[in-house]
Length: 219
Image (cartoon, rainbow, N blue to C red):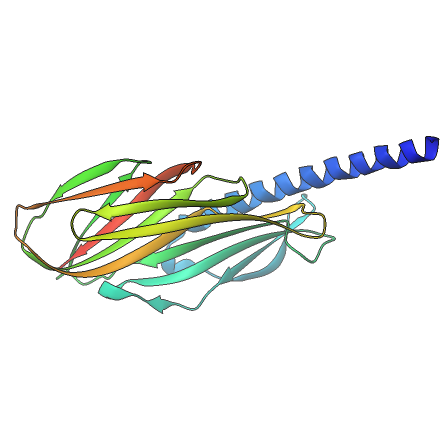
């Protein structure tokens, strides 16, 4: 009985240590992702595993090839992996997307930051025949499952974004979660100067969202 009790106690201690390490890894991943979001698009660089000073963890940054989107937009997928020094699989992974807007002066654009289940109304400064829309939702949901945020561009189109959180690893101690998801649309329209567009967001049950960024590119 004493041996059995000792094993149970040791297992509980190991589980507590594993959970603490996972939480620390998630914090490092979130912090690194926030730094990369504020880095100039042209300055983004991939990085092989590198030790995080005096932490017992390593970080890795993976960048996808650049992809051309509608309206002259460009994008790159960014992945941040945080490893415990003794493990081959990441303890935490954050995926998000960085975009580069077109620089042409002949294209006008407008950016909005919309809260969860919020809306904005925009008055067009000129006639618009072509509208490209990019929506980026920053989720703050770490519970296991799928959450959805829908953006409606009044009478023009609808964009949906899902955030999926999964456990992984033999003991289920690792978490992979999407903090930022995006969707884009390209529309031919006939909108006169002075007309308005209402953009609204609608989140599924249980979705924790910090905000949704919407970029309109008009020509």
